[in-house]
Image 1 (cartoon, rainbow, N blue to C red):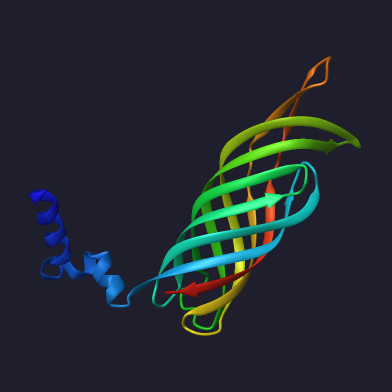
Image 2: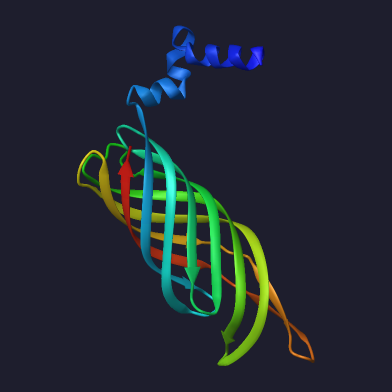
Length: 194
């Protein structure tokens, strides 16, 4: 217990040693802010080629200037045939790195997704798969953000998720393997800094 108290005291007083390296001091001094985001829009999974509702929620950290952001993110998508639950970590960076009121930004990330596959519609044939699979994959995207105030902004973003997930279906004669393909989303987002 003494070691824990010592470490807490050391980190709390680290401004005497290296204030620039203490994230708590930086947050309290207003250099960094937490940012929460909710987004809603449409998504499309390549294999079924059907658009349906997609949404996401994230919590992240951004500097007070807001020119970049690191976030933990959850994305949900369900087209009635396949449902996707995706968790990931990503970064958003303004193209000019001097963005104030409005700007374009790019984003990249790494994700883990769980896929619950009910049916697959391929070549005008419906396969009742009833299988689950998961995958790790990268995503990349682009967005446009408008800051209404220093605390609140809205954005539109397009995101491409490079899935490599596959499911198998046995039709009684042979084993058919399906590649789920990429997942694309287009969302309108609402973010608040606190």
